[in-house]
Image (cartoon, rainbow, N blue to C red; front, side, top):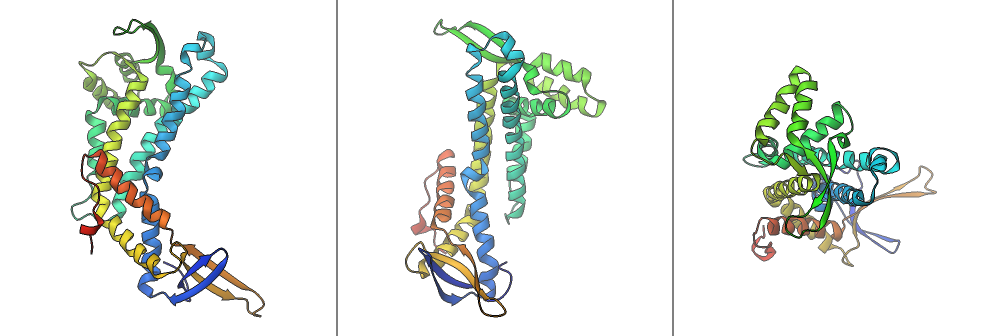
Length: 302
């Protein structure tokens, strides 16, 4: 809600402010909600932190072939690896929490599938569950880097030397089945059973890559569920933007004078076409991920 009276639709062009018309009570309530939803819905807002954290972690993991065993265990490299691995693990849990929270704030007729989809990942997706359990290690026991060993061998396909950050999953499970308090032991036993039949040693980079792809799909599914709500916001804000000349200058504003009328204060919030464009780009990206056609706004009118 734009609190207080006196809010108007107007323009801000190179510092020149113009008031066009007063806002209705309904507009004062709806405009900030629509703008906030579109900003929160942008792809870079939702999944960008995870992408950034994984890029930083990958950069550090790529240094491992040139790092000595001593440096891997302690010192500046180890400190950087600890921090970036922790940040990546946190970004996964943060993404899930963000999606589930925002999904609960939107009015889906049948409810969002996002919480159930993430729960399925946790119970059945090997890589996502490994990432989640490493986060558990990080939170309750010790740095998750304690689970990493360095493997040096030859690529069976190319014969080239390779150095890989590996996790022995059965050994990890057995360790924490023993260390965990009884209420948390079951989760480790479930993870051990889920992993049955999988290779014992896995490349940590594979786990993060596979877990990210699974999350990306769930986020895309959530975006498709939210599409009618976000498109409604897009159309609504776009109509307001279209009322104001020049295009791109629209804002909502309120002008207030001091008691002695010697100064004026202008409260202003832009109706940014960039925010609208990013919301549409996010919807189209979700459709591409799911193998669907792009949005046809000509057929998606009110």
